[in-house]
Length: 140
Length: 140
DNA sequence: CTACCTCCTCCAGCGGCTAGAGGAGCAGGG
DNA sequence: CCCTGCTCCTCTAGCCGCTGGAGGAGGTAG
Image (cartoon, rainbow over the protein chains, first blue to last red):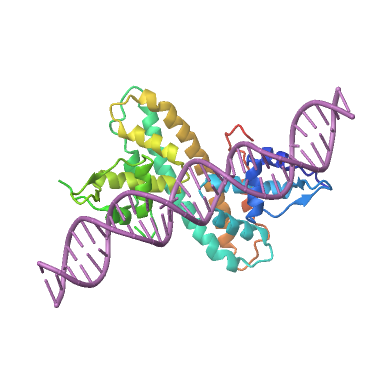
């Protein structure tokens, strides 16, 4: 049996603040963990993985609902992939767009850091991220 | 002289909703545009670029303050790069971490879409994004 | 037994939007 | 020239995703 930690430990392990963990439980993003006799939450390794996943996904700009879908996908082994396929594909497309635009931004920001003693007269950061040739969105 | 558009046109051109554009102006993320005689906002090409930039940056998970910094960087040609260097480097590191984790996630999600008629029994999406070996953060 | 730390619940507030009310500007057709 | 209808204006209230504090109970160490 693996050791379980209280909410403070889970917070340190995941980098998510204590009230936020409780909030995730409240909105059903995280299953209600077991409790001690004294009513304290106990998190096992699975819970911690899930918390780390949520943290990184949020940092990458996925919204709670998307994370919920991804977690469902990963959390139901018996579910046929066919059902999950469209969800996954949707997210794949979104991930690709994110990577493409981050790479373009990276290029420009790095260029800025290279010109140590010059001015940023020719910075094109806005143009780079403002360009939407890689966009798949309908709305613009 | 280039044509300017009203807020509705700016919204369609940038993919940002009208109230959000007004909100960005209110918090000083977007400069107050010129107005018509009838008090309507008029946006030129520069404003639209800025709006597109903000939209993409927000989608990529940058917070408003980071965007403000990046815009300042790109918007002051006379400013020596030395001043801006640290800001740029900080963001560069963040961008790199985002790209690394997005790539890992991409890999896993794609693997999920490949197994058409199988189950997702061996999905490792959570582990992939839960892993924090690329993290530079102090807090965990 | 006391001190102190972590945990509990409840609730209020903040950042970043988003939507609606109520009213004025403006463009096109009759 | 006026009416219809669309877009715009400001103001205010609400939603999502947290974040922090009050007030109190559990648990552990000296």
